Image (cartoon, rainbow, N blue to C red; front, side):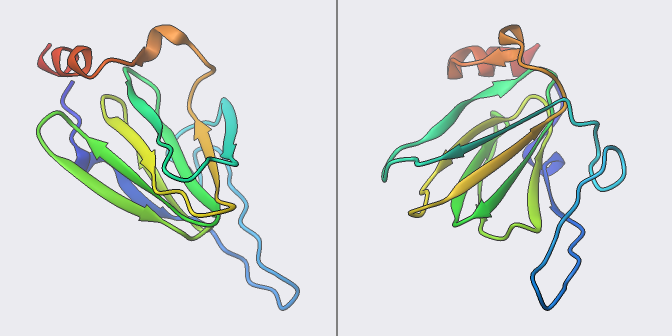
Length: 137
């Protein structure tokens, strides 16, 4: 797996401003670099808790802080980087083969995740040593 943390990018999502409030609409393969197959969100994360702690073999994700803020630590096995998400019109595109941990959730934070595939346990790498071995292959 050749993807590095530099393959992960912040996407500026379309934002339509209106005096009555803003809207961001996402469209498969237009505003997103992949087709959405699954959507889920994390909320009511207790202070000090960490989510994620895994990598995917083939799945791509877009992670968005739709409310509040949190950090995403990405790791390619050689280098790590922390990205702070706090705007609903900016998302972190995570490519396959990247370990991720979500941490430092603010009170009331909501994390939206758009995924390129349906849930498939066999795509997950949940052990960090297994992740490092996967990266060597």
